Amino acid sequence: MALQTSPENPAPLHVINGAISSWVAQLGAVWVEGQVTQINARPGMTQVFVGVRDVKANLSAQMVTSPEALAQLTPALAEGDRIVMRVKAEFWANRGQLVL
Image (tube, rainbow, N blue to C red):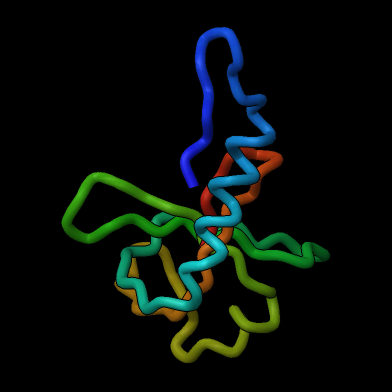
């Protein structure tokens, strides 16, 4: 669905981000390959943030997982690892950020 906008009738940012979020939600789960660039796991956190970069192109994304899921990996995940993961992409509309 194309949004009808103009200089006189611009769309508010929350409308744009909501539309992007809805579209990304339709993608479903996908397999993704990447290289781990950063692992941000702090004691007491309910989420672990993992930076992942494309192995062929100059782009990156952030993966979010639970500390329990990360702890179950054998061998343990480390920066520099190349990984294949099954993810559900989400667009966090309030931050304007794509996460896996």
